[in-house]
Image 1 (cartoon, one colour):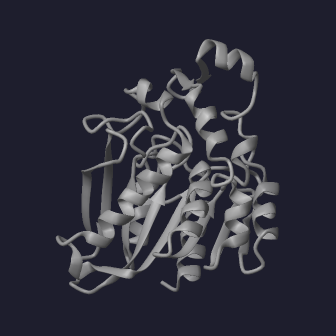
Image 2 (image 1 turned 45 degrees about the vertical axis):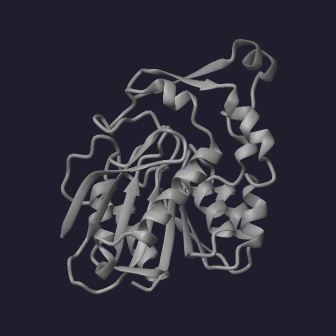
Amino acid sequence: MKKIKNRVIQGKHNKPIVFDVFFKETNQAKPILIFCHGYKGFKDWGAWDLMAEAFAEEAFFVKFNFSHNGGTVDQPIDFPDLEAFGNNNYTKELDDLESVIDWCVSNEEFKCELNRESISLLGHSRGGGIVCIKAEEDSRIKNVVTLGGVSNFGARSSTIGDLQQWKKDGVKYVINGRTKQQMPHFYQFYEDFKANEDRLTIRRAVENLKIPLCIIHGDGDTSIFIKEAEDLRSWNANSELHIIENANHVFGAKHPWEKDELPSDLDDVVSICKSFLGN
C-alpha cells in the first residue's frame, strides 16, 4: 500500500490545501474516491487513515483538509489557525474540492494509477452537503456518497442564531468540546451563505442529481438526526439509503483512534460504499 501524506496544492483562496493519497501501485488505472471531512473535522481525524487504507484496496483514495479548516501545512491535525477557521465558508469548501478534483484530473505523477473517467465523492457530516452540491454541478463526478450527511445548510447553527448580535460583533464563538478552543465564526460566513443561497441549497442539488447517490446514516446519530438522511432520500428517487443500526455520527470512531482496525460500524460503511461503487 502506497501512502503519501501531507502533499500540498494551492487553493483559490490564498491558503494551501494539505492532502493524502492512498493506493496500491499496480500501474493500472483505478477509480478515484475523494473524501471530504465535516465541520470541526480534518483529514487525519480518528480512524480516517484506516478507512483510507480499506478503500485503497481497490481505489485511488484522496483525503484532504479544507484550506480554511484551521489546520496548517506544518500542523494539519487540530486547529492552530483559528483565524482561517473563522474565515471559512461553504463556497470556499466547494472551491477547495474543485481544486482537488482538478489535481486528480491533471496529475502526471500518478497518471498510470488514475482512472479519470471514474471520480466519486464521499463526504461526512457537513462534507456530505458539500459533495452533493459539487456532484450536481461538476460533470466529472460519477457517484456520490454521504456519511451522516446534512440536508440543509440554512438550518445549521453556524447559519442561524442571533444575527443582529453576530453582525454587530462581527464574530461568534463555538466551543470545541475536545480541544476546549473557542472557535470563531466571522459574520462573513452568513453573508456568503445568503449571497449564494440557491447554489448552497442541498435539496436543489439532490433533486437535480443525474448520478447515483448513496446515503449512509446511523440511527443513533445525535449530531445529525436520521430525518436529514430520510429527506435526502425523498428528494431523489434514484438514491439509496442505508441505515446502520445504533451507529453514532462518527460510526463508532473517536479521536485519537489507537486501534489498528476499524470500528465495526465504520467497517460496515466501507462495505456498503464498496458495493455501491462496484469495487
